[in-house]
Structure formats: C-alpha cells, structure tokens
Image (cartoon, rainbow, N blue to C red; front, side):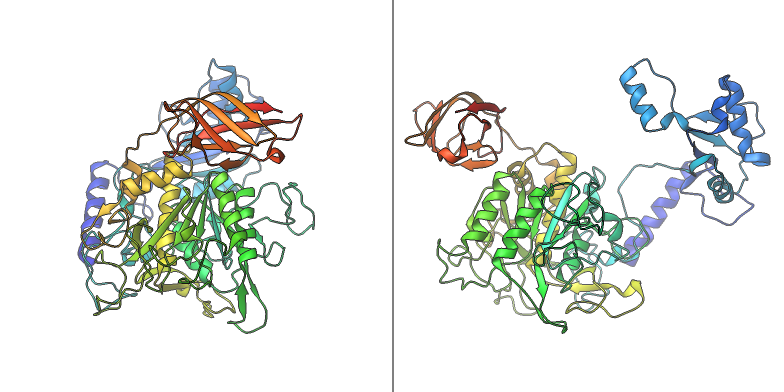
Length: 589
C-alpha cells in the first residue's frame, strides 16, 4: 500500500511539474488544483455592470471588481465565459442557465486567490465566485483517506490495514474501479434504490449523494408531487408509511457507502458510483432495544414498488426471505414475486444476493434471487484472492451462496471497508467523531452493492440501456477466474472497466401490426427481428409469448381484457431477450 501510494504521489508531482505552473510565493497554499491568478465569477441578473452597453467598457468595469489585484497587463483582465451564438435555441439555454453572466477575471500571478474569492462572495452583485479549477486527464485516484484500504476498488497486494491486517491479498483481485473512473464516475441523473433498513442521511460521506425529491416539500403532510406518497423527500419508509428513512438497523448505510460514498471529498472512503442513492426503508423498530426490529415480505414488496414509482433504474436488494430454502415452492412469496415482476416490467435492474448460508441455488431456492427473471442479477461473494467466500484457513467450507446454473457472478464480499450509521441501532456507532463512522463487513449483501455501483456506472455511460442490457454488459465484462469457474454462471468476478467496455449485440425488433381477440384473450404481434422468447409489453406489464409462425414474424401472448380497456389507447411494444426494444404502437380496443 505504501509503495503504491508513494509511486502515485511521485507520478502526480511529475504531471504538475510538466504543466509549467508555479505556486505563489506569497502564501504557502497548494495551488495545484486551480490556475494561479484566475477567478470565475457569476454576476446576478440585476448587477449594475449590465447597464453598460459597450462590451469592452463593461469588461473593464468587471475586471476592476478585483481592485488592486487585477492583472496589470494590456490583455483583457476579464473575459466572458461564453460568446454570443447564432442559434436562438442555444442562446436561450445559455441565458436561462445564466452562463452569459459568468466571467473569468485575471489577477496578478502572486494574488491570494482564496482571499479574492471570499471577497467576491461577500458582494451583493455576485451570485457565486470560485477559483478557476484545473482539469487533468489520467486514472482517477480519489483523495479519500481510507481509499487505500478499499481492496475491492484497487488491490495492490499489500497488507489490508484495518479490515484484515493479518493476510496478504492477491494483487489485481479487484473490480478495476479506478480504471472505470477514467470513463465515468457516475451521473446524478441515475437513481439507485437501496431497499433495506434505511440509511444514515447525515453521514458526511453520504449526505451529498442522497436523492432529494424536487417535487416534495418536507414535513407539510401533503403529497405535493401526487405520486401517492406523502413527504417522500429522501425516499420513503414503506413499513411505517412516512418519510423517515433513517437507518433502523445499520445495514442499509453499509450498502449505500459501497455504492455511492462521496468521492474526492477528503473524507473516509470512495463509493463505486457517484450517482444518487434512494433510501427505501422496509424494516421497522418494534421496541427501544437496538435488536428489536423486523421486516416482512409485504413491506419488501412495497419497497420495490415504491422504487419504480420514484424513478429508480437500479434496485439493490441485499436481503432474502426466511423461507426454508429446501422446502420452497413456486407458490411461496407470491406478493414478493408480483413486486419483482413489476420491476421487470418497468425495465429496472434488480440486484439480488445469493445468501450467506453456503446454499447451492441450483437446488435450493431463496428469494428474490430464485425467481429467475430477466432483470435480476444474482451475486455471490468472493474474497481478496478471487476465491469464493470461505472461512480463513478452511477452503472446504463455503459461506456464500453459489450456483453454476443460477448465480450470475461473484463480487468482493470479504473484509470490505464501508460506511457505518451512527445512533442507537444494532449496527450503529455511538462514536461522536465522524471519522470513526466506518466499519468492516462481509457477505453477499456487500457483493450485491458492488454490482449495483457498477450498474450505476453503466447506466451513466449508456443512459438508454434497459435492465437487460445493463445486465448483459456486466456479465460480458467479468474477469474470469479458475477459482470461480465451478461456482457461478460466468465463471468470473465483477469488473467495472469490463462492464463499461463490453460490446453486446442488441437486436431492436420491428413491431408492424397487432391483433387482439378479447373473448379468447389472444394477443398476436407481427413484425421482424423478433427473437424466440420475445416479451409483449402492454402498458407497463410484460407477457411471455409463443411462436405463431415458423419464420419468427408472429408471436402469441395471453393478455387479459382488463389490460386493454375499451376506448382507451394503450401503448404496446415488444422486447427481445437481448434487451432490444421496438418502437411503441398504440392500440385502442
């Protein structure tokens, strides 16, 4: 770890030397993150400088806002961020965003940039001011101090310092997150629901990546956005039907940290994906004791449904039912199955655990993993040597669930550092110091969180991908391992860079015509490019099909008449097993 850190610091130093930038001699601050002598300022719309008609005079007036620190050169000491454009549409966007009110002000090279920025921020005519931060290229190595202990993201082969100080991992047995971050670190437009015990919304490494519902007003007892849930500002507590999504147990906070702990905030750890976490709590406390909590299948189902209503594209389900795995039948957990089917209809990826009991899921069912729907991805736990999770020194006892025909892939799930909730709960910390709100965790819950984070990276890079295509990219990008070959379908371990670079062939079908016989409930679709196993999606619900022609141009589904109310235009499309979707046709019965 120390060797790798020293190497990276040396490399960064070389890059900075190559820029030709020099630090100010007047103040011992680190100027490597921004251009010396430059400040970005956005003026308010009513700033008096805009009353000056002549552009050059206006710019000179703006430059003089810096006072004696303004650059003493013949070139402009202030310049607009954007120039005028001939496109009315682009000009309107620029104006609405206020980009035509942003200026770069050039200062004396020895100026105290931080002081000038603070002075600008104190002005009534300034909306914001900031240093002109530098942009560089190359691998993203976060500045979060505990990043070096996150072996699943970057495994150097050095001793694990906190979570497992006594054993040496295998170098490169990681998900290659640092390589994936060169392509994307995630998007705030991607919502990942954590359907779990709640999340510590105040954790400093999570607070900025928690989803906020822009259409809801906190605490007014009104469903402001008319989505059916009152006060769901930061997700929803489906167990108690309120907006309290604080962590009742501590488990959800651990999951959230792996998925989306804030990167480059100089705090704690780095999450896989800098997208938005949607807290969905379905655990309830039934007493004051930290272990007095429970959860039901019905509330789990509610949590899944809320997630798709709220707009999540990925759902992390790091839990399973307590049904006896060996006795479970197709008739068990139907309400949960209906909810999982709904996530499939909505095109949302559902990341499920293989469990921590060492079951072979080829023969023992656990839910929701064993429903086997196209949008589900089932995850086993691997360790820092790319082996399945087993007790230290006992390779013959397997802790993780597995299945060469039923579990898709493995992901890190042993000795993993993550965030810890603080407060009075089973897995909470009672420490006052936030730097101690971290913990080490094992299990397939942790592994599923890594897959959810990578799914968020994929969705960020390929925003039009549905659940099936995201899943295909993740599975196609795994890093194969002889140690895992007999335990999971892909024979490999999650790779973030592999998922982002995987090339998958997608066949968009063409939907040409539709025929429906209400009496027999026979629904036939006609077209081309449809694959065997194509799904007919009526409204938002999918129906399986059977071929009705030998050439693949017609498929038959059973669709109840209630799905097609008379006189109502219903959207119809078809989805191939490879994730390709047709354009929508409207059908009115």
